[in-house]
Length: 85
Image 1 (spheres, rainbow, N blue to C red):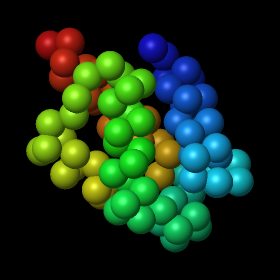
Image 2 (cartoon, helix red, strand yellow):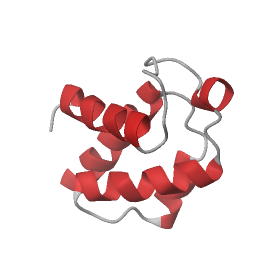
Image 3 (cartoon, rainbow, N blue to C red):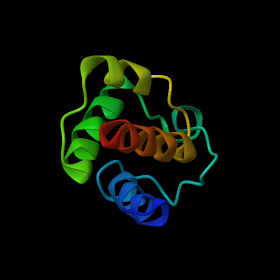
Image 4 (cartoon, one colour):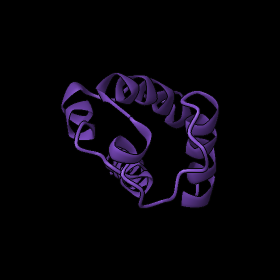
């Protein structure tokens, strides 16, 4: 899956499930959209469905520092890359 495809899927989730209004790639999701740790846990569950495997606890803990859509995309790409190697 390409970064653009991932971006489209994550944007759809943020807009549909979290009611974000067209978040920018570098907007701070916490500050500008009220994204909190509970939202992050919900998003991680949705990311697991997208990538087709479970995310380990240690990997989930790393996700708690994510602040932007670009951070989310980098995180997903790193998860996928780690599984391939």
